[in-house]
Amino acid sequence: MNLFQALFLGIVQGLTEFLPVSSSAHLVITQNLFGLSGPILLVFDVVVHLGTLLSLFFYFGGEFFKFRKQGVQTAGNLAQLFSLRMFWLVILATIPTGVIGLLLRKWMEENFNSLKVTVVTLLINSCILWSTRWIGSGEKKESAHWLDAIWVGIAQGISILPGISRSGATCTTALWLKIKAEEAARFSFLIAIPAILGATVVVLPESISSISSPMWPALIAGFFSAFISGYTAILILFRIMLRGKFHLFAIYTFALAILAFLFSLKGI
Image (cartoon, rainbow, N blue to C red; front, side, top):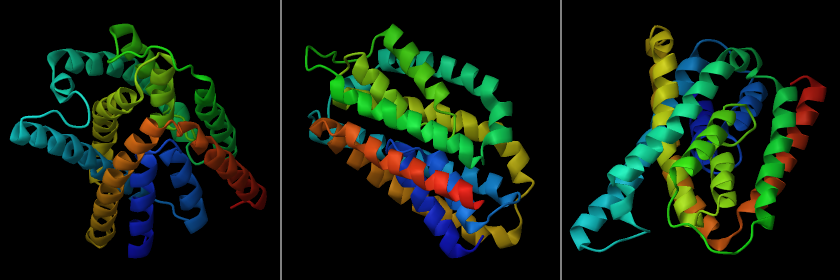
C-alpha cells in the first residue's frame, strides 16, 4: 500500500463510516480495485477505525466544551447527552450489537471481500434508506427509551454485514421509532463509540504483530485522513437529518450496488 492509496482509503473510511453509504462496501470495492491484500489490510482497518473514533470524541468533546464555556445549550440537549440515563441507553444498545457481532464474525471473515455479497447488501441498504420517505410527521420523542435502544442496537449489529451502513441502519430504525431526527443522529454516533472501540480491541492483538517499519507512513496517513474526513461526515449528516433528506442516500447506494455488480462480472 502506497501513500496515495492510504490517504484515499482513509478519506473513504472517514466519510463513509458516518454517512449512510456503508464504509465496508466502499473498502471492499476500493481494495479490490487497488488489488490490495495481505496483513497490512487488517492493521490499516484498525488504524482508520481509530481515526474515525477520535473524530467522534473530538466532535462531542468540542460541543461539551462549548456548553461549559458559554453556559448555553448548543446543537441539542447537551445536558441529556452526558447524563447517566444516556450512558445506560448506550450500554443497553451495545449488548445486542456485541452478541450479533460475535455470532456473525466467522461468516464475516469468510465473506467480507465478496463483491457478490456486497451487491445484495447494498440493495438492501438502499431499501432501508428509501423507507424513511414514508415516516410520518407526527409527534416525535425527545430521546430514545430503553426498548428503542435495544432495537437500534440490533440494527447496529446487523450492520456488521458489508454493504449495510451502520449509521443508515441505526438512524433509520430510530426515525421509525419516532425519535427526533437530530436525536436519532446523535444516538447513532454515541453508540458507535463502544461498537468501534470493541471491534478494534477484538482485532488489535492479532494486528499489532503484523506492523513493520515500512508500514508506518501509510498507517499515519490513513489515520489522519480518516480523522479529518470522519469529523466532516458527522457535520454533514447532522445537517442532512435536519433537512429530512436522508432517503436520498438510497440513490447513491443503489448506484454503488450496480458498480459493484459490474466489477464482480469483470472479476475485479
